[in-house]
Length: 518
Image 1 (spheres, rainbow, N blue to C red):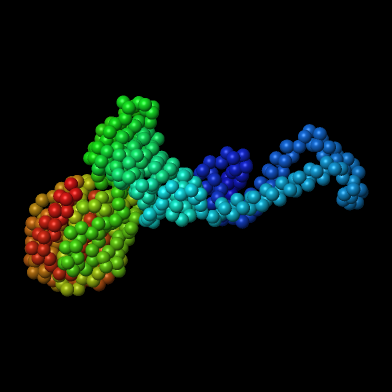
Image 2: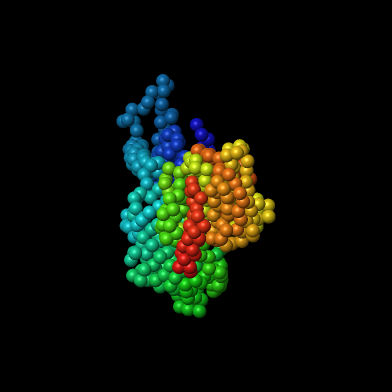
């Protein structure tokens, strides 16, 4: 049996009502896994109840019981036979009858409690909000898995994934794990730790988000809140909110600040006033969906083999069509802020010091025509060099690689049917913290690179070698040696060479979308 020595020490904490949330969670987990431990827990509770009942007896009753025990021992027959009931004083029956009733009641209550601990999800008595949707989420309500879609007042902990919650008057709140929050009412939530975004319609004006350092009162807007130990940030994307420092009194207007669209403030523990900071447009998840804008519609019109929209990573590496979907690679490291895409939605964020390690497609579309095109948006977050955008090279297999070379220049390499390789390099380094649209085409005669709609390099080539099932890697290679430090979005594969006019149309449409979102 598993060693539950430490967990048994929690029995007394539970009986005294001094058990913490973390200790209760450990005890619940142990009780679920071990039937013997549950029996010990029941016995412990029975004894504890009996001792409590004994302590409640008067001194005279306890003295009478002790006197009976002493007299009974002296008068016990030599053969060790039990005493007859008629020889027992009334105090004995009173005590043991009471203890027996206490034990039975305690056992019944305890069995119900253990049954609740080992399997029943939390039920909400009064609903003040509704779970609209979730992505790979693990949400606890007062330490128990949430049962259903109704959220009542209480504490919620989101350890994994994303949740979309609707409060009163149509207020939409998006929460990203890890997060710890308390639902106060249909008009108020307290964010203890983590990130949330809120979209408040005119009917929801007055919605409040509390943090340990501040109070945020909305006046019909879209805003996000980020809480970390000792500090809170409020980022307003549209409309107006009023931010009060936690040190401010109810009538202390001087401690409050109006924060308008495109503004952000930070409030530290103990500070009397918020201070201005730079707005972070791409840190927060403000919608779970990857919008189908004109760029996506144009891509579909060009009949791609596979289109990777790079939605928020909790959805995985989703493809259109879905049979070519892959997986988002993760590893040890910090979970970075949300990686907003070039337009909206998400992107694939890859970093050597973060938990995002790229993407992999084990059942990719076949490349069998001898021609090929790849389009994508790339964004560098560091001056890292010799890093990969995408490749299916593995030893002598595969037929393409798109990367940055040792000088930070975009480079395309293809493997041809004659057994050779052809590489070309762009004319300038890919800029840092800026989205660049890249296209690589190979038509059996020329290998070309386009950057932001313009042809920047070309070289003669023959047809590429075919590939049916070679794994494709995005943002890394099979050995994780050439990690892209930044973001990749809107990745598209074709089994033909796009024309110069098609490349120009894609970039022009993308720019129109970007300009419309400013």
